[in-house]
Length: 385
Image 1 (cartoon, rainbow, N blue to C red):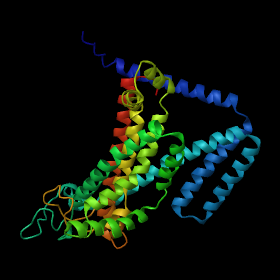
Image 2: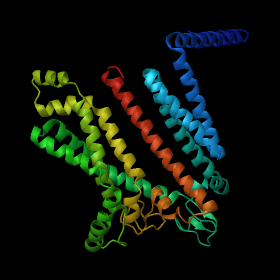
Image 3: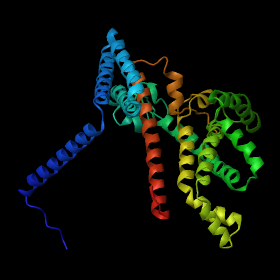
Image 4: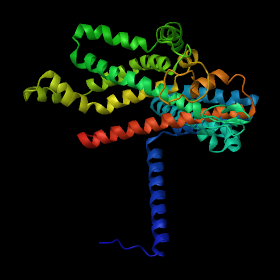
């Protein structure tokens, strides 16, 4: 049966009813807050909010009086913490949450605003152009960065995709296998040694990985395989994949450990072997967390800067064929920002900000994908979120 479309005259009535209901709900919340909160705590909340707003506005204006609302905030929180500790803690946690979201929003807004000149100059070609029309005989992928007023991110976008794919092919299977070993197979003594060692690897600076890749991995491929240059996408992707391993192993292992022991014991009681239980019960039950670990590792591979900056050749172009990971070209979105950011001006700088926007969108898509995978697993396996 088809639903009856409400007459147009009913729409204002429904809208007015919804607004009235929302206002009544807001009034009830304000009444509840007033009834359960002391007058001193309410005054503290008001002074804190006003101090934070004044601090932000004076900071944007570059005023030398910014320190005054800051001191007011600190003094109010100090007094409130001694007299109304619970309310002060609520206010502080609320402000930190608002500050986090606000800072991220301002960063995104700044990236978008700074990239506008490059988008105006190049249009969609900033992200899609593969030939330079200013050249007499334009070849695929040549002269797309700073030649004849052309700025195109396509070579760096391709380089980012290649290195990320190589790193994922290394980090995902090896990391998940390592997580399964540490969580389900390794004896207790081995686990006590291996797990801290893996977590310690995450603390090694990326420049250290890059230096090892430059002096050992690059040299090895150049000497043994005769690569066109001493730096290749494959070598950089290999090192970035190794860098992402601790993230994948740690997050995936925590997800597998979070699977209730009752589920594993039930499978064993039904006659399954430990490997069958791990393969058919533990991994599917913890797949959302395992997927999150893989996506976090991919995010690190996509956003890695120093290791790739040290190892790649910083030549821009398209490999031929496109899957030639040992070609003479080598540049990614992160490396072009790190390598050229210090000397960039005007449209060049705006194009680098546009590269940052592309990276942000890629990472955001990864985050959305991880949320979707988690939702699908909850739909499949059930349980509360």
